[in-house]
View: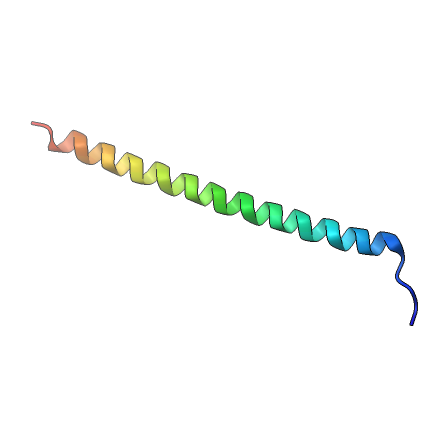
Length: 51
């Protein structure tokens, strides 16, 4: 069994960390966008209820 070069393991680790970071950022962005949309909806509702 040939030994894998050390840099290959480092590259795999780096890719996994980067993927996790990107996924986390995407989820956070989605959450913020959702919160913004919800806030806008609530604000809109408040404005339309006023007479």
